[in-house]
Amino acid sequence: MGIPFLNKITVGGLLRALIFILLLLPVWMLFAWLLKEKRQFVVAIIDKTVLNNEGQEHVSLNWVLNQEKFTKTSTDLYDLRKDYFGFFPLENEKYRLKGLERFNDNQLSQLASDADAAYITDAYGIYRNEWFQNGDPKERSGIIYGGMSAQDLLFLRKMQANHKLVVTEFNCLASPTSPAVRAGFEQSFGIRWSGWIGRYFSSFDTTKNKELPQWLVRAYRQQHRGAWPFTKSGVAFVHSDDRIVILEKDTHLNNELPQLIATEEGMNHYNLPEKTGYSFWFDIIDADTSYNHIIARFTLDLNDKGKNELAAKGIPYIFPAVTAHINNDYRFFYFSADFADNPIRLTSSRFSGVPFFRSFMYNTHDPLERKSFFWKIYQPLVTKIFNDYYYGQLHPSKP
Image (cartoon, rainbow, N blue to C red):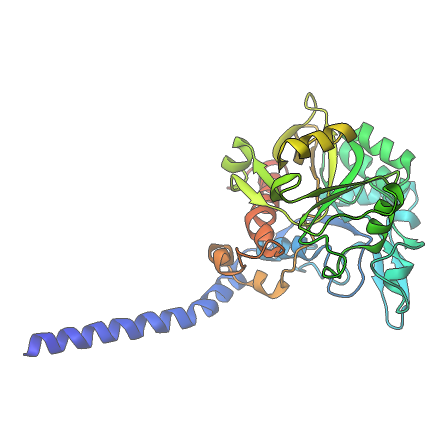
């Protein structure tokens, strides 16, 4: 009788020990992060679309910098609210502009010398309807600040000439960036914008989906004699000349969500999954593959009617998602979507090993959720890009 009793005590003790370990796990993860070595890695962050102090358009980047203990100086971590160039919101609808537009050539040269990397997270900017309280965020109005500027482009070219790392993403090329600056960027980095951007919408029913932009519906109706025959989910395409194309589930799409498909390099080197759904804004580019290579592509699952609709408008249904130039001259990446815009809390970046638990941090059944994109795509991709550059170019003697 004594042996089963002892076994029962042993099992109970093991369970209590396991519970104790699990309860202390966050403490150990925080402690491990605090002990992690700081690594100075100076990133010039450009974000022109900062509506509030949460820094939604660059919080994902700051998450990676924090998690990896990359610092702006030998001791200081990056501050989400301060350490970027662009639009700075203040109280009572006031703001401050601190972009590269105020830099002269010598100052840009100095910045390109001091910085290890440049990252434009968003150049779309701030519009009057978004900023002022009486505006309608679903409409488009006059711009306050935005677009990739001539100074931004000059800085990126200086970084390129200095053999540095350059990372850019949507929206750098589309409106409100001027055609001249866009052409200069395309020539310098071997990509070309098609003029088309797109986005998935969970419903095209104007009576149900309050997030559906009014300007999008209005422009389509103006081009189609007042018709708006869509109610299901699908993908909307918008051209720089305001042409609108709508692909609807079942009518044009077998699977309504655009899919990001990783190449062998994307899976093996950058730890990307083979296929991931994407539900936010993207742009369609062409990449000079004699100069760059593709790490991942977007693809749309179309039926014959959908293929004919896109072919008639000259829109491809397979196009680059992650374009890279990796050579000894410099390193360049272009993300053809809002990669850095994810609903992520910066607090979790201070726990070592937290990506191991990523599958618990998002709802796989909700097509609109974007946390999974951060954990599956952005976090492993940008972490690998930064560490490759840090150990490959800046500190090749370190392990």
